[in-house]
Image (cartoon, rainbow, N blue to C red; front, side):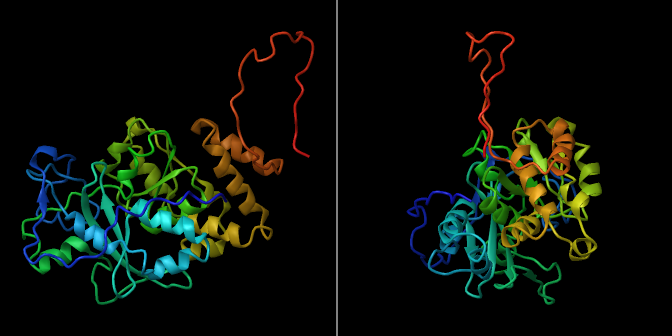
Length: 340
């Protein structure tokens, strides 16, 4: 894997204490999106967005104070065991991954205009990278806006209009094919291990809704968790204008143990990286992922079958120019350079 180039860290100033009169920023002239009506829509993590009168967001300095490079979260500690440290540092900045004193991770939702909608605070095991679920938190997820509302830093009528995790990267990488996954952790890991795609996350299995409309016009392939293929296929069928392809790669190559452990595409890539020679099936899956971005989605099934049947290995791709050798006679064959 070629590590991503190091990025400038000047964007994140030294931590400063929060102002006691902290207030949310509201953008009445830039509100967007759509949501299901109802009294609980602000707290429900997966409802579509309703058009709020004012789009209230988390202040920038809350994000800046949380994205630190002198303190590793438990998740970052794990990431450095599977991804080189310089790439991990770039991922922290690119996705604005925060950390709190306890070592828990903050995944901020930042939209395409750079506005922070909220942040999800989650604990992870630093050795395994698995999430530690807190039994004292009913929803099992603590959100930044909820804590700020409880402390009086946000008004009680503050509404949560969510966006995709990684939404802010769409304008920065307009030509990259997009890979859509469920969890934020999965998007970050896959971005480090397979940077050919721009990895975004819905934030949950059931969070297929209008926030995906920002993907219109982009080439998108979805990688649901191993138990989410049928659900995502049905829900994404309601958005035909997006043309999102749902990959069956996990379902087609899953073992009984994989089903029991509820693996996702990141687990597959980690397994291949740490055990590259033990299972040829995993190699086929990774070669398919590398090649799929160059092939139209309607041919993905045939591509995967060819890779597996003939044990093909992906070397690279380049554009073939027509009539590149006009002087060549019709009956002659092109000379092809093949790898040894």
